[in-house]
Length: 255
Image (cartoon, rainbow, N blue to C red):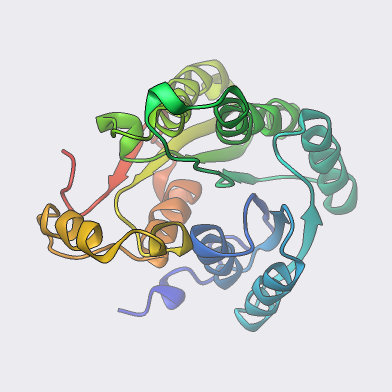
């Protein structure tokens, strides 16, 4: 099935902001939105070369785009970024909160700065971007917000207390905002990836990787593009009656 073809014109004249768009799931989302004709703005924290690669892929996919460099943990920068997108393009139709960081460690050894870094990036940063974006979306009476949570935000995972807490917080944020914004036709949903083959999971030791793969009913890791398909679906008119939902894309690893 040619998924690019099924996306044709789905996001024509739409403006999309994808945080953490320089690689992995963020990059895959940016490219799929571009395939649908969107103008795609990506954010990145530091890897300019990777961000430029994503922009090239956006152009090759038939879209237009540019990149913004800032740390989503800085709430003032989040507000500035949204303002700059709206000023440049006149609107904002889709916000994908994908930027995230994980610092693993047993709870008794978690440092305050590591806890703060994960909560500030994964949860507080997402909220700051939403807070700024909803002003425009409510005026437009149209918009879609998709938050990237995680399977560990639902199931928990030893050694990832801060990361799990931040991702569980995104689920509560998603559901509450969905109720707040529905009257203005702004939909808020979340995608909960399972074990996905990305840079973040590439450092997992081979024996642990094998054991985790064996625990997945579908018997394999997911791909970044499979997550991106779920994100673009929730952002599209095909999901016009879906809000407050957490869509699990995990191969059956958690049900």
